[in-house]
Length: 422
Image (cartoon, rainbow, N blue to C red; front, side, top):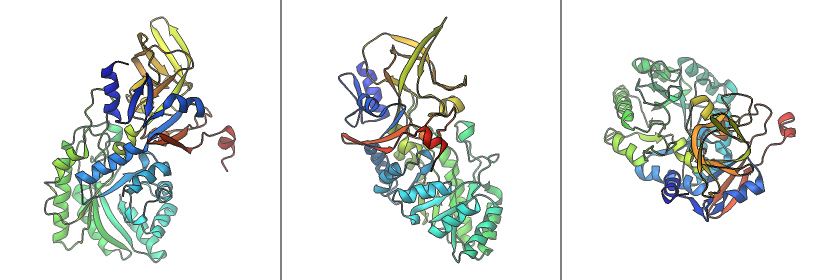
């Protein structure tokens, strides 16, 4: 690889480096990992995750940083974040268990999601989590009944839609009026007044989340201004609002030309608005913690030329990394070993029986041979978390590397596991 390309790797992850033309992460050879453990293979950098949590804590020193478990739910990944003091943002009962297994104190867990089931709510009430981010009037009544039946008091915030365009992919825009999430901003106070009358609920916060993969932090300004305005109105009505949860959503570098916003960039926009607010701020970063911590290693199976189109067929497909198929998302892809060959324009495709099964289209990449490996970057968030068994393909193994050593944090699945997951 050229020196400029080697520098580009550092822009994705400071722990990525080329040693004698071979890609390493935190000093661990990715080729050796693939040779030993097989492919497809997810590999994550623990030091990168630690650095990202610390960056948020430095930018927001008095905030509670709740890692969004949906981005990467492996309990050992969660544990790295929790060791740095992070709580957890969850959207399911399974994520609650993953957070607890990863060492997160339930008193640092916030729970959002539009379709929480009774068993999930019961589990979270029993664990006495910090706060439920309630998304509908029906949920208020159901949660109140459950808390009463269990002899508990459930702490709640109401998720409000500030109706702000986050300037991101429409599928991951969550804070607009037409979204299924939260309650309309104009009617929020009615929901708060109702919640205050329900004897098994304790109103403690306000929640909003406008979307994901935001490369421009300016939409946060309008959203936080609206939330702070609501905070002041509720405080005047006698509500004791102790937490303002402004969500997550900071984007990451996927394309080489992307500029990745930092937690400091976000703080510079929102902290002046929050001046004088006595409530504790909660943030819910997910992708920006683990996205560029991880990559997906895949092996070339076949090469195919069809007139003007060159195909590189690899063993990782849309069942392993679905983002390109459903979002037309870009992931930068590099050879694990650079051999100085010519570059070609190719579609990098997987083994799944779908035309939409691709990792990249018309991508310029160094010529590869059968049996060699590629690294798909920016795969640490919404990679394994969205993986499936489509075409009865076992899900990949996951590996955590740190300071020159590694450990398998999820074994590769077998066919026996798929057919008899006991």
